[in-house]
Length: 76
Image (cartoon, rainbow, N blue to C red):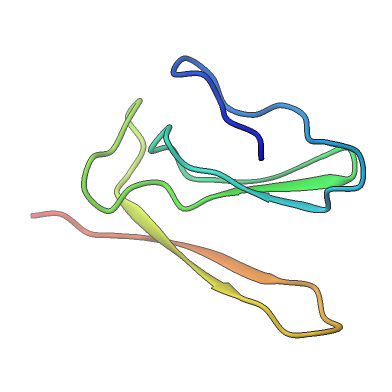
């Protein structure tokens, strides 16, 4: 498990980790760094750093690459 500090997001992962799901920052993220895909759904309630409110859909199927989709939420 990789825990980011309050001021930053994970920038690296343990060897062999292909997908790293994280939160805490409230900033949506779908980014590939070296051989690891970093995924953060953001926040449906408390946005941070000007990021829009969001949530994510994660679908896992054996033998297939995970499907991850970030979705924004409209606010009134």
